[in-house]
Amino acid sequence: MWMALFFALGSTCFLVGPIPAYADLVGPTADAVTFFVGSILFTCGGALQTWGARSDRRAPAWWAALIQSAGTLFFNVTTFQALQVAMSSTDYDRLVWRPDAFGSICFLVSGVIAYVASDRHGWLPARGPAGWWQPAVNLLGCIFFGISALGAYVLPGTDSMVNVAVANANTCLGAACFLACALPGLRPRRTVPV
Image 1 (tube, rainbow, N blue to C red):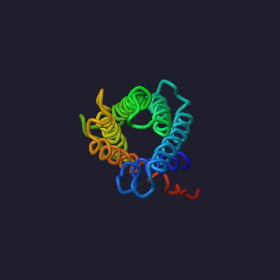
Image 2 (cartoon, helix red, strand yellow; image 1 turned 135 degrees about the vertical axis):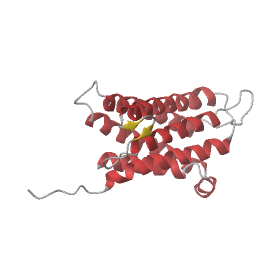
Image 3 (tube, rainbow, N blue to C red; image 1 turned 120 degrees about the vertical axis):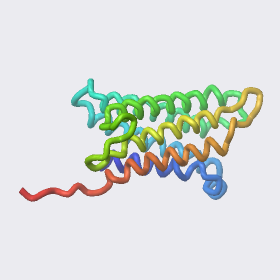
Image 4 (cartoon, rainbow, N blue to C red; image 1 turned 45 degrees about the vertical axis):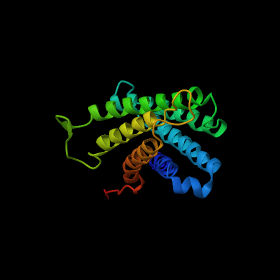
């Protein structure tokens, strides 16, 4: 349940952080703190997920968790540096965007591993037990985060991103996918009397 809580709270931070109305309401520093806190929560969830999958280190679940955890560490760097470096800084691309791109790549690789290991009929998820849809929705969230990283690339010689709206919208969409996957883990498990 703790893992799901960390992922749900981290997802919520990344869901609200890119919304312009939220950034206008709280200001740029608090908005940057929102992203940084969200990245720390993702790292906590990823660490618990990796710890839970440690029993079989050859299994796809362990590899997916380990690579995703590496991605969360890249996002820790990204969000921390974003607190420190202004968009107009010449160091922004090197300090913030590259770790964001690496984090997005790690998320995408982990999402593909988890999806390929899941039950499928061809490319489509196989309906089955509870959570059958989660690997597909998680992968979709990873794709959205990757698109967000592309939109957030700062064009050389300028202080503007490729497309701020694309970056913000895809961050929100990816976070919504991750939140959808985390929420079922917050429900208390029912025990069957023996």
